[in-house]
Image (cartoon, rainbow, N blue to C red):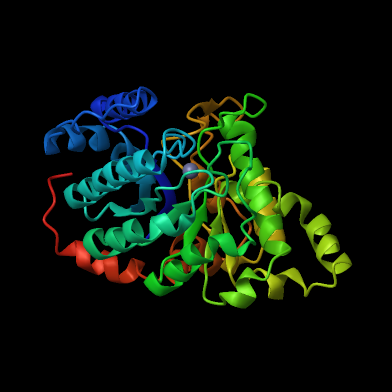
Length: 345
Ligand SMILES: [Zn+2]
């Protein structure tokens, strides 16, 4: 089985994002958001059949762990209440996709974060996503301000209520920023990778995993700059008299394979232990084009993993085994969703 642990619903029916605009505008004017728009099952199914499901088939992957559009989370917009309503709408929509295509998609939720607002306000939505929807993880935004980093470091106790809940629910978090509203940062070209790299260093200098030994964190986009600069991070940890990174962080942190060229993927697999790498492509997403050097889509990351000079056993870990270990609820949810009827794919 080939499990893509990182996909977003970037192709949702247009009325979903239109409502978001109306909601933010209404908040700006001090008014009330209009009622949520209607979306039929047929409309939703069409966006998936022509989108992520088609790509799954073309590339030979089986299951996508699916979450709301990351850049669309926009935690810096509106207020805590706006974020709550938006997260609820987005998560419900993911659940509808999973109901329609239960063998192909399993849900991961976005959190109703808001800059300066205690992440305690996320706990109810987390419960709901796992208990009502069968979601197996969450995207945690380390910078709800959208590129200004106004909230405390992920090492701060500020975040501990979320970590407690993640452990209680047996769900990992993927650290994932949203849209950059700081014009100095390009959203997917710099802010995403900054977020990944920054999160790693924040955990490195923290006691989070001593305090939460069961907590599982996925750092996406190949870990940002981390694998390439592994020596720097090892050296920094040594300078701070911290344990070796493999003991300090790698029982809890894994990286995905959203690295869009083979040399990058080779470096990832050489530097980071195989047990800490999860297959992912983030399709249909940040880099949708075709690489003129290969003639294949940049984000067709399965090709790169297939080409790695590692054993088939190790490849199976990257494609399936590691995801089932990190997403503790995944195997159970795959079995549950097998009993769901869905629509014809
Ligand atoms: Zn993503």
